[in-house]
Length: 204
Image (cartoon, rainbow, N blue to C red; front, side, top):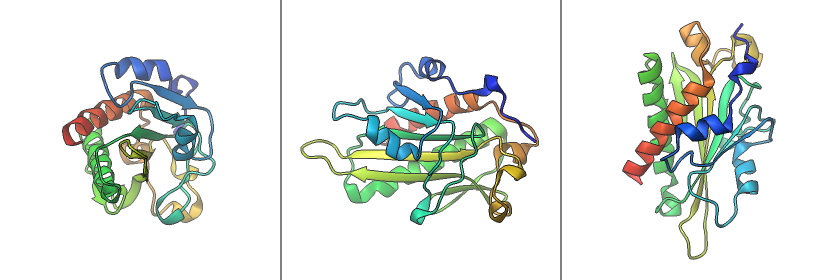
């Protein structure tokens, strides 16, 4: 069992401090619980919200995956977050954002944990042929402004096998299961945000 310690709670101020000069992560919100982080970030965003707002939830009650599938989000065990972006992209090119997020997540997992993730299109990252992360991009057309993009990311971090529903245990994996030890979620979140910011600015 990989138990989430109370000290492992995500702290918005610490995450922001680590991303001070960034676009992604300049403003960070951490909710204890929400339905879906993609929905929640649109509720708090205003027309003037800065690009790069990030909203984490310790628990999602209605996380969404591809094709309307439910994303299982065990409380305090993963990283469930959405990023608000205004890329200069045609609305039909949202797939470029998905590829960017998948490649960056995969690279960080490989670099930080010496694991060998594989991207499974359209929007999964796998370890040992089992899903460890997923990306869901939703774009909204804006009048006379760059389109709004919400990049939702879910990563299984510290779940044990028992944290997954029985029907998913053969198809899902967490970083902790892959490495046989728990992961510092705050440190991993900082690494992810810093790399997402760097690669976003390079590409978009």
